[in-house]
Length: 448
Image 1 (cartoon, rainbow, N blue to C red):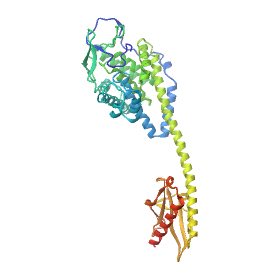
Image 2 (cartoon, one colour; image 1 turned 120 degrees about the vertical axis):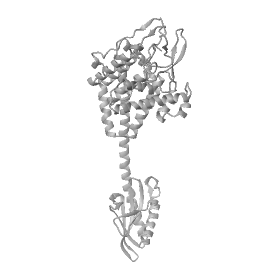
Image 3 (cartoon, helix red, strand yellow; image 1 turned 180 degrees about the horizontal axis):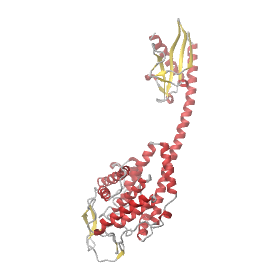
Image 4 (tube, helix red, strand yellow; image 1 turned 180 degrees about the vertical axis):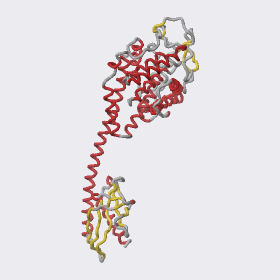
């Protein structure tokens, strides 16, 4: 598993007392960005970010975009604990939870290593803490110590303790100080028995102040988001200021940098865990490039996924346009058929009735002339020259209706809502039209 404790699962213990043991990595105060950080930034990410921004503006607040963001949030909430070893959830169940939501009943159906009652509160804490990052960015607050402690307390709200080692190598549980700097060393042991040193408790406050100060200077200088996020994440894990939960906080802090830039929250999946740990160890040795590249790669993958969603929306828009055009074509055919049926119907009756297209007023608004048919009775028995009513298609409802005229106001119509039919359900047009013509004649006679 390696010696890093950038992840903070229970298999990475802290020590209650200083042990006389070989030290594989000596702690050093954090350092600033390398002077050549500009060449380490991924030049394609700003281009992808601009395409994403333009695409989002074009499609607006679509349900597909909202679903994409919601699923990403749930994915991060699940994966951030998985790579820590806080719990184990099989891939199929993970995909279900991402798609359907954090539902305990769905979790219970999966292959898990703890009870759903234990895992679900942790997932919910991680989900709500990640949601809180968006609120923090919207408030345009500068990162400070109080928020970092608040974030830690939120992420570990349902974690009462952490694992520690006694001097004789026994694992014991000690209370977790939520939102407070560590009171004891938390140096992990390597497989060979040596330890990897993090910042001693007595230096944590000073180092964290330096971390925030340097980060704010990076923001003011316009450091590339992938570089700034990776640097902040790594230097935070070098300090390891909390007894446990440092990996989750580090990824959240990196996400803040990305969100401020309009990019995506950081998601290190179980598949990237080994690369992630190796990149952190390389950065411990003084080379940040691998971590910068990894964070850039992860962002690039999410931009690619998001742009795929925009592409799907473009295709859906074309399909909808095609459907509308076909529907308009179908409506033209249907209205021609209605006129043909009507004319044949009255040819067999002792009546002279003609049809035409005309815009009328319905609820004070004009109807489209091409989807409104008006029936004019030139003669029915001894009655002459009067409007019988007609047929109208309402696009909003997608239904075809008969209508009658108001006797006192021929410009307004009464639509027989209860007699309407959806075009897709209109399998017997001729029979339906004849029924409505009989209805129109009876209504016209009743109101004379």
